[in-house]
Amino acid sequence: MNEITFRNKLRVARAEKRISQGDLAELVGVSRQTISSIENNQFCPSAKLALLLCIALDKKFEELFFFE
Image (cartoon, rainbow, N blue to C red; front, side):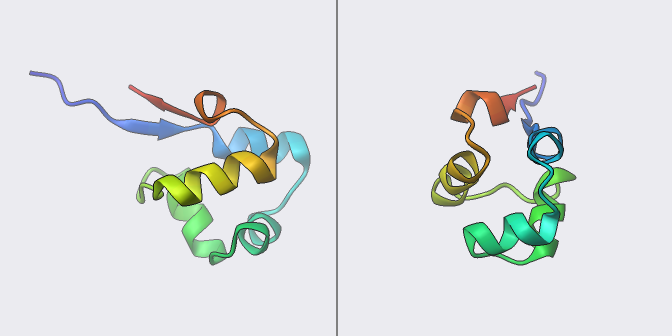
């Protein structure tokens, strides 16, 4: 059985908006390291954080997060 992995397009969306990891972190109330960990699929954000990221980047949930 294949394992389903939760992935994201956070780095791409952030680059489109020209927002640094630090600036995005400040917008959503986490550390820059947390943003880096999410982008590198080392950390799965809570539902609340995922929605805050969507709002900050002006994206729908399904535009930022997906299963692979």
